[in-house]
Amino acid sequence: MGRTSAVAGSGKARGGVFGAKLALSRAIGAASRRSGRGGGTTLPGRLLLRMEPEAIARLGAALDRGTTIVSATNGKTTTAGMIAAILAADGRHPVHNRAGSNMTWGVATALLEQRGEEGLFEVDEAWLPRVAEQLDPSLIVLGNLFRDQLDRYGEMEALADDWAGTVAARVGLTNFVLNADDPLIADLGRDAEGERRQGVLYFGIEDPSQALPELQHAFDAKHCRRCGHPYTYERAFVGHLGHYACPNCGAQRPQPEVAATAIELHGMDGSRTQVRTPSGEIELNLPLPGLYNVYNALGAVAAGLQLGVAPEQIAAALGEMRAAFGRVETIEVGGTPVSILLIKNPAGANEVLRTLMLESRERGDESEGIDLWIALNDRIADGRDVSWIWDADFELLAGGVRRVVCSGTRASEMALRLKYAGWPEQAIEVVPGIEASLDAAVEGTQGRLFALPTYTALIELRKLLADRGLAKEFWR
Ligand SMILES: [Zn+2]
Image (cartoon, rainbow, N blue to C red; front, side, top):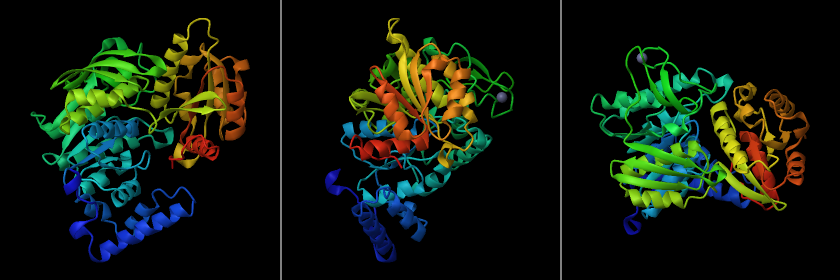
């Protein structure tokens, strides 16, 4: 490592015109940062791609030790962060794009600005085929496909088709880590493996006690990709992730090699999970909450094994994870701990609501319930159509909330949704404006405040916290 480490952009890639374009992009990026305008984190990559559309392929070719790509609707930032922690425990420091910068320009910026001999990139679902074609990845990790917003309906099936094309083109060149519990993802492995399942490692949950009482209505992929017949589910764990089979053509969930056999969830504190792997049994003590993070961790464990890291080392690395890079973090605001949980689609929101329900139950009968701040925006990056909130199960928390302050551009619709979900009307307040509403929420909170922003509300929140010197502004 170290001594012989290849520099992305060095060697034969550096000379001549391409070298000049790299230098120019780096210089402008540095100047933009010095001017303190912020928000310039992916500017170098954007500039470079404008001048040199093949830049990702050219820079990526210098990553001699291979490249891992992670994609999913929910959890790709967390899963990639977990894999980074696993590699770090093994003394490896890949070129890795910053949390959330998962379009081509985020990848290009990382390649431009970091040195390393292997790559680790989280990639937006829609960009996966293009980035995979350019990066020649040695490993692709696919977590799940959920319907992100109602106004993107139909895209999920189209994405699955695009991904299938990518997998078919990469058979024999790339190893795959796939979620056996997501029928859309698992099916891609059947395309890859023929009957031999070569280069494919599946992960999944095998603890029936974690099954949902009934299928939630945020239920996306209920038709067989092979024949169009509805799947029958023996059980579901998160949205449509579970144990399924097609009664018509016989397609069924593959047996996962990396499997969670016993799971204990401990509210916001995390979870303890027994995991069976081809290299033996390990126990994961995850400091991140919820079953969805168990899925993220299983994907990371399987990836770690594919990347040659020992199971005990993987377990140790995940046990020391912190959420700083990811989707759950706690920041003190005026002495009140504020735990931030992104909500952006029904399935993701349901997992957050389920985790909060456990949290509220763990506080016991003497508790009056939890305090919440929910910020619903309808800007382009959120999806303009906010009717997805009617598909999320806010009913789960009806008996467990002390107070909720609604904010964002669609605050009143959020409040209306909560009333219909049976939340006590006197507990619901609407305060327009991110800053005023957050301060109002913090002021009235007993103990911890749970902040549930949509994507652009999270960006506003982070900027606000950064301006107050409470957090770094790394969301873009
Ligand atoms: Zn079928």
